[in-house]
Image (cartoon, rainbow, N blue to C red; front, side, top):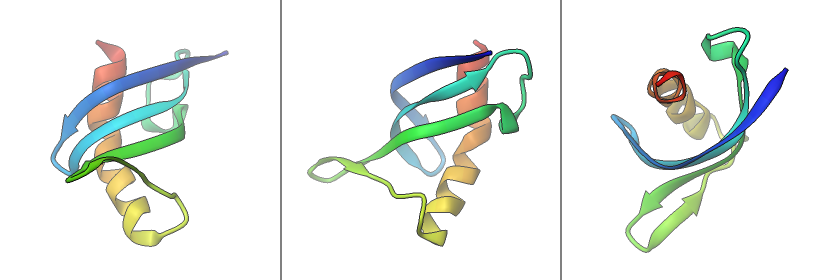
Length: 73
């Protein structure tokens, strides 16, 4: 069963993010997180990040452990 989540602000080594998604609480690992919306704090406010670009995908992958820790807390 997947539970929806919203994190309005999380600070990671890659930046400050706003995240929405689904989390399978039955399996507490990185593969259990599905991100549906990801924004990073830019100089003019929140900027939506697309999963399609490899550079963004690496940023997301780097931030997933911090996200998972936040969800478990």
